Image 1 (spheres, one colour):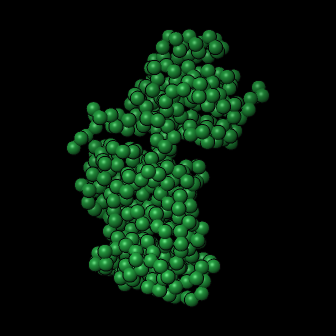
Image 2: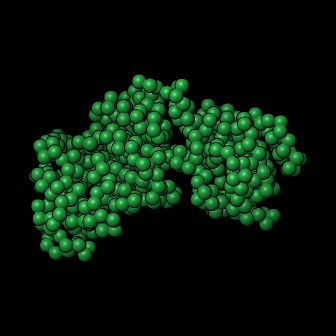
Image 3: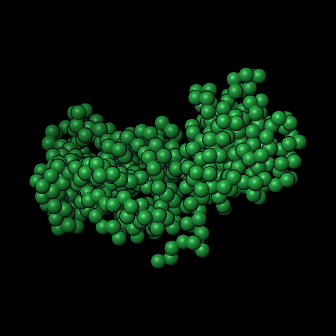
Length: 457
């Protein structure tokens, strides 16, 4: 699998100067990468300043990876030349295979037979490609920010769109693989690779259908024992199941069966696309909790109530603070402030109040996780970032390893504070219920990782 993600030399079959073709977009990404690139084109000359070759057999050196972006009917015949080029790995971006019906299925079977005869491994067809943010971009989507989250997606377009989302949210990826129809390499093999990848601390998965359920379960279970695996399942309804077949040609499975498999494997389930990377973020940024007790700090009672509801609904417990903690907080703040959980610092609570409350709460042994909310005030000379600064100062002063998340409200007014927290690896959300969901999933996964409760089969 390593040549898919760490090649030294890459050939692109279907490289094009035409901006309307995928071969043009892929080539544009490759020439900005840290690999040697060899464009294969029927048109002699240069593409983006790089000399083209008419065939894989004419290259001046062996290559590690071949990316194919030509008509589906031409793909099976390319396989022998891919092997002659020195490559044992190929990514077939081209569509028009099993996702299109019986004729496409036969063409895909021919592609796989040719690959097996030549001992070439395939990712795809009908995919976006692969990338490694520390080395190269072999896709036709943008290069995401460098980070620690590895992402494998059965859907190409959805995977590509998700990369734009991660960039907008400043969430970094390590590696990305769009496997499309998974005619040869399936999600399980990619999971096995990501599990051993030192650059990846969290794995995100989008999956629709499966072919070999037992193998996938074993890969998910083995990966979850090493690092968090966050899974979003498409095709949970009857209509969705029907769409799965026409999308990637995969076999849909019972939602109940699949959900049970994920639970037994210790995976983290994402209910929506929007939550997939928000869940990954808490695992990437924060330590795992030691228990399920949550304390909430807020400067608005309403948001604190909503957070407390979400905490309860998700099976977490509101911490009962020690008398010492309650005394420290009550002696430092206004008599009108609430020292019960949720702790309400009132609208007048500013940098100092957030610092003291954060430090004292994190030091309380009854608290496993801290959820902090701020509706950033625009009065009394307060700055847009001082509440976030107070939180960060409190975290540093406490000096303990407990997960902390923020909910910074008030739209654009709250954004500078939110950005400050995120840049310091404090996950920050726009909704108390999403923050509570992330804490609950972290607690669930932490419980799975404890040897006394983990499946040892």
